[in-house]
Image 1 (cartoon, rainbow, N blue to C red):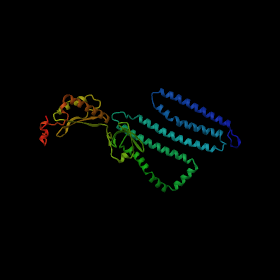
Image 2 (cartoon, rainbow, N blue to C red):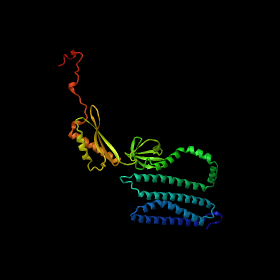
Image 3 (cartoon, one colour):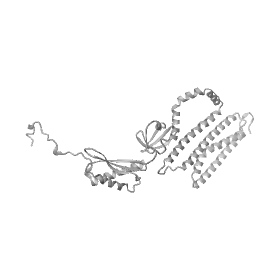
Image 4 (tube, one colour):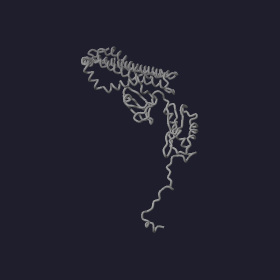
Length: 363
């Protein structure tokens, strides 16, 4: 279907474009029909899989069409070998992309078995952290292998590869020194996935900020701070710098509320009042409650209320509620018991002027 001299037959070209347009149109209709069908089903995995493979399979279809049309209509063109080369690159990229999507699909199925919303979700978050990190590792390996195959399709790249193999020792040393930080962070990400000093949704104190672990990658960690700011930290930070992890083994936590009151406030009335706040309170887990005088000075006594909760957020809400209601209780029933600095005017020294004549003409 080609003219002599390697010139393109425009009739064949128009036919090829028309066939490609028709196939793309058919693909669009089939996708829309499948989309309608998946929306009617109760499960969500088919919707997820359909959306995930939409573009990769489209690339694969484009590869098949270009391959077929090139051999049917463009075989005699001088640019035929370049077209086949580009087509091979599309195939390699499509296969790599589809492999990454299969990895994501496998992670999705495993994540569905994890209940992170449960009260005791330590094991679920542990598995979720491992899945996230190892998905990143697998995707990185697939990307490296895919681009390696793409480069190997070029003759120049193959020659470079042979020369690099000949000088692998020197190149390895140079690359090792140049990329030691990047390699160190990559290995730190793997170490975190295995040893797990942090997990997704862990409550941590880092750089003086309270927050939760929102994202863990091979190179950095995102901490969602309580005021919705994001703190970005290198992944090796959590292996080299001390930090607090409030949910390392359990989300349970103790919290304190301090009051500084006068000696005339009976402690027992606070011990009797606080249980009324805790009764049927969803933020108290029922494990720990006590009221103690933990310190005294010449002006006041320090009253500490200790309560427990299932997690840090509930404990914060519980402590603020106790603080507000106890203050109102003391103000309503024992208003004179808040700490005050009292001055006894009877014991103040009398100040006399040095020159009594200054007051002689004063009334």
